[in-house]
Image (cartoon, rainbow, N blue to C red; front, side, top):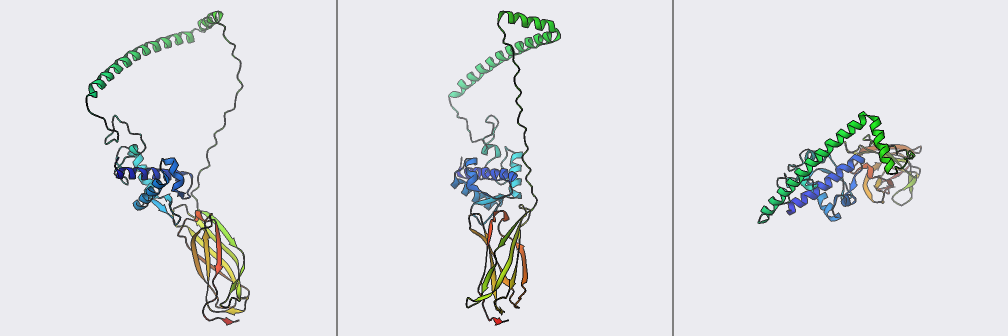
Length: 321
């Protein structure tokens, strides 16, 4: 198999694994975790990920080698399954049957298994003829025995006394064991796997109150009631966020500028994305001033596990309240 065909075969295997993964969950998958099930090494899985990314059949994220199959990828796999002996549009050097080792050698076109030519062909013909004769004889005898058994079975079924007499005669010569009733074992009831919902899923995160600082590192105010919500649309459209908080100039200053920074964290603590928003310092807002911002996320909401919130020190000219 040429290097081009090998690369496309590995890429198709990985895409099929992502296709199967998408039936169980809408969460992105790390391709190294799918490698063993596809017969690929982790390095081969990463190369296949790059190929699929260039082809535009997967959705990728900021976490390296994380992917989710998109609509183009689903169409590519289902088209390949419908025409398993034809080269796939996204993988023109291979077919679905060749990649999955299901090609019938006797009828395959462009199969990777090639027949050798030479003096062995007459021997093969002779061997095939011998096998054919043996199979024909065996088939004819099997057919005769089957017909006899059918006739005897029909006779015994039609005349119950003959069947009982034959059984009694047999058991008079050979001790027949008395069949003891077997305890019935309840078969485990098959519980259907819960269907995977494609409805949007929402996550809510909160963060503790803390004091904000001015340019001299003195207290400029307090930020509280910090809430961030994200919505996972299961790949149907970009995931979204809503960030909210309340700020009070309890430090006795106003004006100047400060920035609220919301870091979106993965389960491992890595920062997936940082959102920045201007803090409204146009008044002292002693009772507290609520602010709200919304927008689209750059990464999948399903990867988000926690948040970290901070506020920069005051820049520019500030005044007293």
